[in-house]
Amino acid sequence: MMKIFSLHEFDTPSDDNLATVALIEDVLHYCNYENLTDELQPFSKYLREYPEVVITSDILATRETSHAFCAGDLFLPVHDSIFKKLASICRERGLVEAICVAASSEPREVTPVLHWIATRLKWILDLVDRGIYQRETLPTFGSGSIADIAHTRDWETSLIRCISWHPHCARLAIATRDDRIRIFSHEIPIISILKHSAQKSVCCISWRPLAGKQLAVACHAGVLIWTIELGAASNFLSHAVLLKQRNHTPVTSVVWHPQGDLLVSCSPTDTRMLIWDTSKKESVPLRRVGGDGLCFACWSPCGSRLFSATCRNIFRVWNTGVATLWHADKWTVPIGRVAVACFGPNLTLLFATDEDSGKIFFLPLQENIFDVKKLSLDDVKMAVPLIDLTKVYFLDDDYVTVGGRVTALKWDPTGRYLAILFQDSPYIALVKTKLGTLSRVIDIKPGCLIKGFSGEVPNCIDFYQKCQKELGNLVCLTIAWSSGRIQHFPIIEKETVPAMNTSTSLISHSLSLRHDTYNFDLTAIY
Image (cartoon, rainbow, N blue to C red):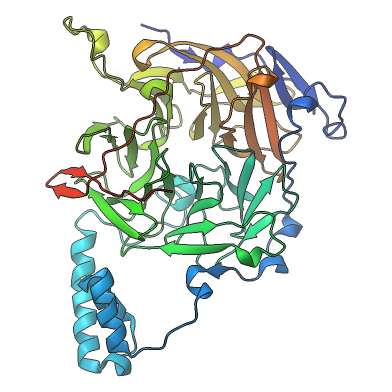
C-alpha cells in the first residue's frame, strides 16, 4: 500500500517578501511586485496568452452597468387578465406553478376566496416538498452557512468570490463581492460586465462546454443562465434567464455535463438535486433520503459519474453511463461532511472532509471488466487515504502554517498536479500526482508551496483546462488573492507526457422515473 503523503515533505518556504510566480522544470521562481510584469522575466513568455486582471475595491459597484436584461426584457409585455394568465401557466408549467402564482398575487386580483385557497394549498405543497429533513433557512455564519459551503476562503469579505476558466479557450469569468461578473479574454480588449437584479450571493459559476458564450451562475434566487455578447460596445446586449424551483434556494453549486446538454444545481436547503434542460427551463429532481440538503456536485471528465455531497456525512456517486439507468452508490464519512471533491482522469475521485486535521482520500471508480480472475483486496472499491492534512509549522521570522481544513481542491486535466487551498494558511500546496491502471494514484510527490506578496492570502483557485504542449506541456493554475490580484502560475515540465485516456461517454437520454432509478431524455443539441 502506498505511503500517506505528509505536508512535512515540502521544503521550507522562503522567508522574504517575494511572491512565488512559476515552477519551470522543477525550479521555483520568485519575483517582487515591481518586476512582476517585466518581459525579461523567465516566466513571462508563458503568460502572454492570459488576460491581466487586477480587481480593486474602488471599481466595485460602479455605475458602468446599472442594468442588465433578462430574457423577458427582450419582448414586449402582453397584459392579460389574471385568470387567463393562470390558465396559460397551468397549461404550460402545471397546476402547482399556477397555484404558486395565484398565492403570490393580490387578493383583489384573483378574488379573496381563490387567494385564500391558493395560499393554503401552497403552504401544504411547501410542507410536503420540504419534507422532514428540509431546513427552511441557513445560518448566516459558521457551520452550514453559504460562506462555510462555498469553495472560497473568506467568501463574505473577499473581493473575488469565484473564478472559472472556459473549458475550450482563454476566457476567464470572475465574480466579485458586488455581485457582478466580469469576463476577461486575451483576444477581446473589452470587458463584459454582467449584472442582474436576481444575481445576489454568487458562490459558483460554470461555463457551458461546447458553447462559447453561455455561463451558469449559482445565486440566492436560483440559477442564472447568461448568454454573453463578448466585445460588444454595450453590455446591455448580454441577457440572462433565471431558472428557479420552489424550495431550491439558495443555489450553491452549478455544474455542466461535459457534453454541455445537462446542468446540475444543488441547494443546502433542498434534499433534491435538480437536472436542468436549460433550453426548456425544465428540471427533473433526484431525491434521496438522508443527508440533509446538498452542498455541491461535480461531474467526471467523461460524464459517466456524478458526485454529490450532502450537508451531513453522506455523499453519493451516481452512475450516469451510456445506456444505463441512473443509480447512486451511497458512501459515508466518519466525521463531519465532505467539504471538497474533484475528479481526475480515468474516473479517479479525490475528496476531503471539513475536519481541521483530516486527510484527502482517493476513490477508484473504474471497472476492470476484462479481468476474469478472482477479485483481490486491491480490487475492492474503498476510499484510501492519500494526503495527511495535519498542520505543519515552518520556522520563519514567524511561524508559517500549512495544512488544516481544505477550502478548495483542484486537479489539472492531465492528472499530474493537485492544488490545495487551505482555510487558515497563506500558502497553496501544489502536489505532483501520477495515475496507474484502474484509476489508482500510484505516486505522489511534493511540488511547491505557492505564496503571494506580503499581506496576501489566496481566496480561490482554478486550473486552465487546455494543456499547451507547444510551450513545453504548460499547465496553468490561476489564483485569486485577497488583494484582488489574479495570478497565473505556469507549471512547465521538460519531458513530454503522454495524454491520459479520457474517453468520453454520453449519458443515457430518455426521461423516465421508476422508484429510485432514473433515466433522462433531455436531448437538446447545442
